[in-house]
Image (cartoon, rainbow, N blue to C red):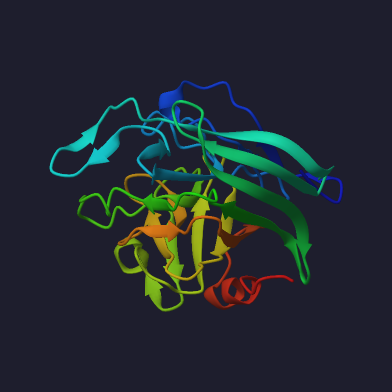
Length: 276
């Protein structure tokens, strides 16, 4: 993807991955306008973390996140429950806008959800060192079946591990700083519902960057990690399952401002205002 003539992201449409890694389309590498990388993919600590992607660990019992599945009263367990999210057709494709259709499938290939997804990359007015990624996603349940979205937390894991949704695995040489308004640090921000979250880090090559996330929908919460690994997620089922009733849709708009340098909190708040 391009902003003007500057390459800022690569969209991997159909990765050739083992099913246990949760094959799905993802963005990687994502870069600042100066070229600093701000995503990681297939890291040794969590191989199924794939740059920036949509992924949920429990979709009517199918693992569409990758890795081990958290089982109530048992813990993390390898199971044959991994599905995949697959591209089924383009609606629009230009360097700054990708619009396509997808299927969220169980291990046998049965379609659990259909999705229409649009990704756009655009400059941020008044901020020449920043650009904005917008992902619009509409998930639709089949006419005859409700679809329940869950997480390790809803399946019994303690400790605020309600991940699954729009997830960004960041790349940082050391634990980054995370803040959301007056809240600072992983423990204060994780599980919150602030309008935006900012992650300030430094890439292994040395470039400083700031990522500003927005886009919580009704019932969504922020899942953040900075110590075990750097990541931010718009979590669909942080503490309670989320249901898409049969024949209905769930729409989300997730925005990330990717900026060179270290943005002050007031600047982060200003650029977090959704565009459009």
